[in-house]
Image (cartoon, rainbow, N blue to C red; front, side, top):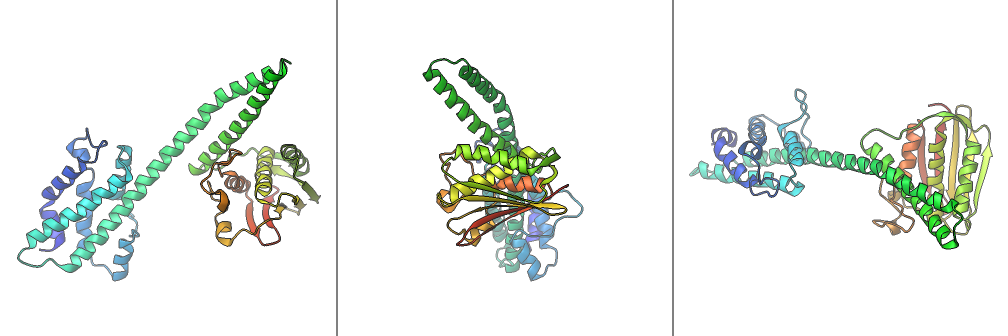
Amino acid sequence: MRLADFILRDMETILGQWEAFALTLLPAAANMKSLALRDHAQQILEAVARDLSTAQTREAQREKSLGRAPKLTDAPETAAQAHGHLRARSGFELNQLAAEFRALRASVLRLWMDACQPEAPHPDDIIRFNEAIDQALAESVSFFSAHVEQARNLLLGMLGHDMRSPLQTIQMTAAYLARLNADDEVSQAASRMIHSGARMQALLDDILDFNRTKLGLGINISPTNVDLANLFADELNLVRAAHPDHQIDLVMVGDSQGVWDGRRLQQLLGNLVLNAIKYGTPDAPVKVIVSGAEAEVYFEVKNSGDAIDQQTLNRIFDPLRRGPDQENKYDQDGNLGLGLHIAREVVKAHGGDIEARSDEAETVFAVRLPRRK
């Protein structure tokens, strides 16, 4: 008996074993009814049976086994994709989702081989069945992961937004205490609160910006007519005050006026300069060079230090990444590893581009900004 025929003939037996196994996936399955436990299982098996009955080239079979089957043109999602989405919404874990397909594979093959006796099962059916299950598993995992990531991003966004109000209250209270001209102990405590509040505010801003990019919203900008000469000079003065032991040079060449979001460009420059201070040679200056062309303005942030290898450069703007010696660490400055990622998103929001290059002499972050998006 061919496997496709067996699946359609013994569908109820297979579904019974699927349901029995799904019921063991606790705690998510504890209060689920039969229909929910079997969620899309019949449609997944029917799709597998159709696949087994369809002629395919070896290349098509190979692509399917790697989870790269052609996408449907007449449906928004496959049964396996819908199953992954609903299992995520029902509180299942990813390893439990994978276990369902693992159990399904084993039960179908075992039941079919028993039904084939005394004849030997068709070997090509086994290969094709495994390829179809691999494709279904890949589809389910993809939609499961997408749902979990979206839920996590929404939670981060709500958390970051809701934390702003109590943080602003703390900052306002600290500023009020500082204005009272009380004794030194109170003034110092107020100063520490103001400084810590500013750090927390910066972290929340980074989280909210990162969250917007992960939700596909991009960085929010409000362009106006601005002059980079004034904006960058002000921002570098703040950085110099926070890092008095580091020399930061600013060189302006040509027209630096354009239509941009000034606050965002200050954030961009600050992120790049702080990165240069952190990873550059301590006693070497950080150089910011701005040059204006007819339709665009270019600027570079340069620092001396160890060369960055190409593999790291290729992913240097990825979120939650740092230098090799800082990987997987939350550093003493409260840095989440989002600075360069947010810098890239700010540039993209302005219609520009940013690149990084590095050799033994220096590391350079180069930015191109159209005067108007």
